[in-house]
Length: 178
Image 1 (cartoon, rainbow, N blue to C red):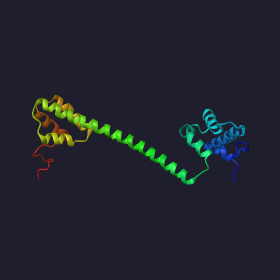
Image 2 (tube, rainbow, N blue to C red; image 1 turned 30 degrees about the vertical axis):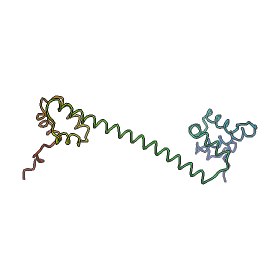
Image 3 (cartoon, one colour; image 1 turned 90 degrees about the vertical axis):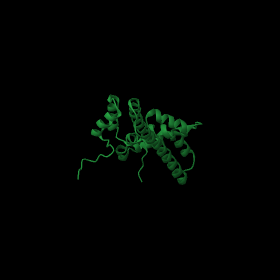
Image 4 (cartoon, rainbow, N blue to C red; image 1 turned 120 degrees about the vertical axis):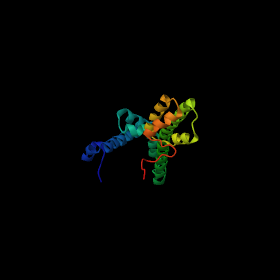
């Protein structure tokens, strides 16, 4: 067994800063408990945060740390708390990714709608052409098409020009004349 009390100056404390901070944290908790203060654990947590001892962890989970020190350690409860924390982190991460994907989809849909709207202003846009525009997912191609739609004088001109950057028209093949 290794004594990690700070006054023992064990070499493992030099090699593992987190363990050294934990050791200091325990020392501060003991000091506050010995003083007989009413909120000894809470005061110890606050002192450690101010002194930079496990401060990041204690800022995030200070109240949970205090509750675990007050209560008798319960392995099952600890596992339950860890699972709940992981679940919350997963939900937050999922929401963030979902928002990113939603923004990306919104940008694509906006470009697709802008292209169709510009084309509607210069002529009748067939359902086939609308479907092909809506089917395109590549933002670079949509950006090119948006510029072409803004410059085109007719829908047919747009269709001819987009044939060079990714849209195939009725009856076209891939250049394979066999």
